[in-house]
Amino acid sequence: MSKQPTYAIHFLVLLFGLTACFIVNISLGSVSISFVDTLNIIFGSVTEQSSNTYIIWNYRIPKALTAIFVGSGLSLSGLLMQTLFRNPLAGPYVLGISSGASLGAALLIMGSSLFSGFMTFSAFNDIALAIASSVGSFLVLLIVLTVAVKVKDTMALLIIGLMFGSITAAIVSVLSYFTKAEKLKQYVYWSFGSLGNLTWMQLLILCLCTVIGILLSIISIKSLNAFLLGENYAKSLGVHLKKSRYIIIIATGLLAGCITAFAGPIAFVGLAVPHVTRQLFHTTDHKVLIPAVLCCGAILMLICDTLAQLPGSVSVLPINAITSIFGAPVVIWLLVRKKKMIF
Image (cartoon, rainbow, N blue to C red; front, side):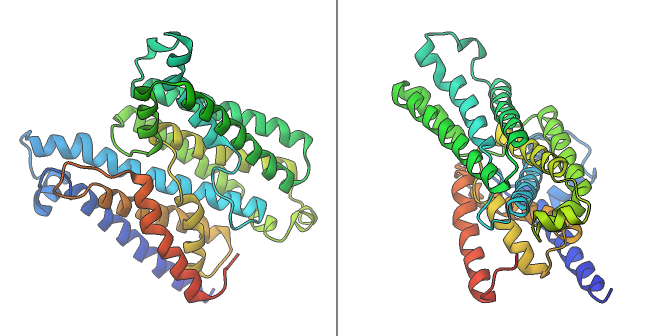
């Protein structure tokens, strides 16, 4: 009970930081809009339809919300994988689900070079790309769930997931070798990751998948805490191992697959944020970690997206590069400062 006020203060600070990062994010960009004007537009003080209003409501706010969902979802899926496999190097993509999404995108973008127009009907628009990526990640998720029925050892499942990722990466490499330069460039740009260009309908789908993943994680809190002490201990507490594994894998697949489909493969966040959160909260209790990871992941992605926009410039840096450049030194500093990893 004595730690509860400390956690409450932590969460208040995180919520304040999340709100501040959100407002700063939508205030900055290639078009200069003052902070006061941004607040007036958000809270309805400005009634006339201006170009600034259009930019904020149709581009900046959807992009900021996308950053929140992407950061929260990847961070939570990373936490689930690290707990399930009891491996600090596990991330949301260890089961090969992201690789499946990448394969779906690669087949759509680069497949036309090999199949002479068989796939050109899609015109490679954002919706078709999201559908192809979702189908790829869903198929890999089905394969992983099928294998999970046969394999009882969790570590063996981790290795099998990594092998699926290697297989899909190899197929993408073959496609890249034979495809035309124009299509290869398009795929490379997709692999950089992007938080923009999502419509409100796509954002709604992303939000729905994220919420379902969060709910499945909340249901699994008891199992997650038990898994930290080993599967035998979890079994002695009455945890249904196979059912719990299914729920955790489905939640991770839903989060990582949907995010990859809409935003591309974004690295580092799912691996690093759970470690940062454990260092900040000094706990392994998932009742605390799950909401904390959601907030920390959202804040990190908002900060990285703000830096990637190069405020005042029309250029936008790849979000993948920013997440790694900005986040990796923070994690290294935390681990060196604490001298012990909490896990």
